[in-house]
Length: 271
Length: 315
Image (cartoon, rainbow over all chains, first blue to last red):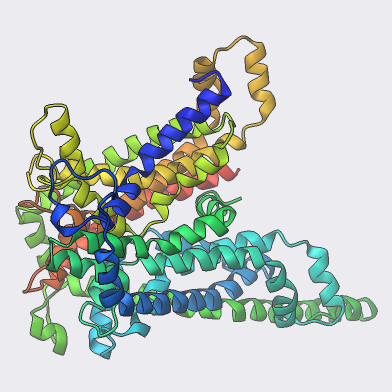
């Protein structure tokens, strides 16, 4: 491989450009005029750019974006409330049967979402909660909760025992120790779990397309899906919606890159 | 429960023992109180839907009995019907090809990139972070972008091929290319995951191992095959198995790009299952659930291998 460092940087830039080309293309097409869309060869730069696509987003997709935001935030809350106490118990309280529970948490992450969707569909239909935002939040939280518990367990195991013993000597019970010692020092893991729960719920298509396809409030993934199904011609609007739907991922990468890398590795290689 | 040590010190020995048992019991009680939400959650939102799914696959459902209940128990009949369906075997084969090709290429490219970025040059950290983007995007965003790039008439890929004199390839609409096209998009999405895991594996190899090998006069190619690769074996096993379990699950990309078509040319077990239950006007939930359960069994088999590899790596 390249010997000189500048050459390496150059090779790195080229590789990154190749890798991110589809992203560039998405942005380029989002600015392309309808009448130039099927031109051959296609415009490589949006020199005759238009905002038609983004105007369509503004007029048609805002409710979808709002729903996605609510679903994603709701999923974060449900995930934290259920996963954080479980992580604390598994890491610090030595419950009997924790090996078995950890095993179950690993296994359930391997169940394909489409199979969960069948079960949820049958249950939701009976209960009459199909096409509801709350139903979608609960289904989406299955993606993040097992991962969340494992992350919390790993992080909370690393809290120095002296801190908790000091609180115990001061007379703090199990709940107090959790709320006023463990949670505050676990801020990083709370951020990591929240970020992934948000992103996964925001990106979910399987549950949305099965449990909420007839809903009055639908997430942005279905907004894009309807676009693709309905008007094959307006690719600038489809790509503009795709660009907007990518914003959370972009923000995440800029402000929370270290949490992202930590989440990817912690989910796979437990220490 | 927090005072048992102090209290035990002044009490007689037998009393301490029973006291301690009481304390440990109340500790267990507290521990499980914190696990109550997750246990209830797993029962209601995992065990019950899975049970419903198995139940679905063992009964003969019509749309009517699906809503009103009272469907007839038919044992494994749905499974037999599905296995005899002309779509099943192709779906199984496509799943194997899609998963196998994705894994090998993601891993090879991820490894090459991890080694490249491990050389620490100017901007290497920033560029490595940018490589994560495809993995963070909603799958529907990536899938629709690739759809348009691979469009037969107006896609940039065919425009580039035309420029070098190659005629249009019907990436998504010909049975020859559809599976390869969705695999290509899936590889693109999976590279970052492999890069991050393998890079963290490289970081955990002690630097003096490399120095020793360099002193022995091993060139960089030899160092990779004799030192790096064997030391990365546990991380590689985990990366591959986890990638396998993730790839078996992939549904969004294929469904959005080709809907498993044309003529089932790119259908996998996941899209076949979805097609049966949700992709038609006349849903066959019982048969869709049966296909789904076959997919679960395959995923779990490899999932157990993954857990074993992880335990081995931890020791």
